[in-house]
Length: 256
Ligand SMILES: Cc1cc2nc3c(=O)[nH]c(=O)nc-3n(C[C@H](O)[C@H](O)[C@H](O)COP(=O)(O)OP(=O)(O)OC[C@H]3O[C@@H](n4cnc5c(N)ncnc54)[C@H](O)[C@@H]3O)c2cc1C
Image (tube, rainbow, N blue to C red; front, side, top):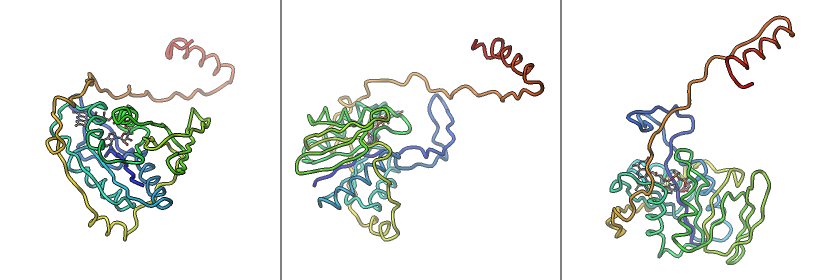
């Protein structure tokens, strides 16, 4: 199988977020593979173990994103592709999908695995937009994948229920928690990853004009949630406590 995984470098979910000059600051932040994209890498490895073939991981991002590509190679992917995002100032999900589609259109992928959403921008648009650009099907939030010939039998998460879908390859799928347990890269895997091929492209190499992939949306404002006040503990006689609680809900919280 010709398997592609699209993946994004995101903030570590343990990171404390701060905002500087209207943008989320990445000063001193730790970065990881977007957790949903780890499910995609793991599922790609399982597909290869069952059906053979080759796994290529692709990311658009800054130079440092090559670290996360190497992690995916250490997990078991065969090849990596880094597309530089430097030429586009204000990219969005449209830009990402358009660039990925240009890269992938002649690659004859049997399946393209993406994360369901990213844990930073979290628009959940890139997978479906990419499928639309490539003119192939897409199944989102998948929790089980079985490939049989040119068909995929898929279980998908629908608000806690399961929907079973049959879909035709080539196909884009977006991976949801519960699909698998991503493996940790082994030491031999990490050593091997250093020698695996990593290709680098910029927009010129892909014959993409900057204007054609400029974002279609603009972030107007980014803000942190309001700081929570300290909690209040009521003491004493239960009846008095209940009366005080009602009074606080009316006068302070203003919810009744
Ligand atoms: C050229 C370029 C310039 C950008 N400039 C800016 C900017 O100036 N300011 C800013 O705030 N943001 C910028 N971005 C980031 C951009 O807004 C988001 O990456 C994009 O909207 C994806 O949205 P999302 O993170 O919500 O992904 P979602 O749609 O939630 O992601 C779903 C899945 O799509 C795949 N995916 C998402 N992003 C990528 C990626 N980059 N590479 C490979 N696969 C991916 C992953 O599998 C992911 O799990 C830029 C992105 C690009 C490509």
